[in-house]
Image 1 (cartoon, helix red, strand yellow):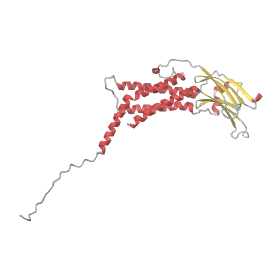
Image 2 (cartoon, rainbow, N blue to C red):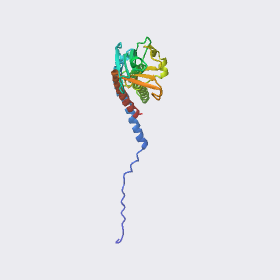
Image 3 (tube, one colour):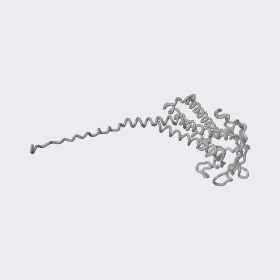
Image 4 (tube, rainbow, N blue to C red):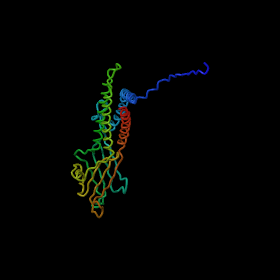
Length: 294
């Protein structure tokens, strides 16, 4: 037996190798988390955001006396506008080139007085008053009111839609990914309307010289405007601007046109812009949240 060799075999049972992660499972889990978050936003965030936005819009409607235009569900007390007189002065150059005072009633010009440097007039200045018997609206202010009114209707409608989706309070609701997509689209349309409202008083909208020639209030100045003189009023950056256009020889000015401007800040428009900016900020935040879960 001596010299006999024995072999020893050791068997080891290793645990099975872990399965490789399935990318599809990860994607499904991420998608499910986003869906859950989308529904949570619909149930908890949107209503609170709309209440805040409508609160600021209600303030805008009160400032602009839009009780007759905005959505009646805001329950804004009816109020009559009051006249406000503004003194317009030049910000650059000689302050004697153009001075004006304008009396506004909401978006209507009630009276305008101008004193503009005009060598052909006695004393070197043309002075006139316009108190037109025709409607003289500042279109930009009218557009501002119309856009804000449409926004109030959109958001009040969206509030009602949310109440319908929430159901009768028995713990069940009708929120879904499709309702989230529809709400997101409605919010984007609303944001565009608010942007138009802001632009209406931030960006100048001037009539052409030809339009000014045929603009009825232009003919209501007493004494009448000289044939080579035109006066325009418009809004720019929440300021009321008066511009005087006088045709002059090209030896005096290369374009053959001398322009004087005077302006006055409109504090109530500054206040409106502040509230519109807040509304845009909170709605954009909600849009970003919803978009991230789509």
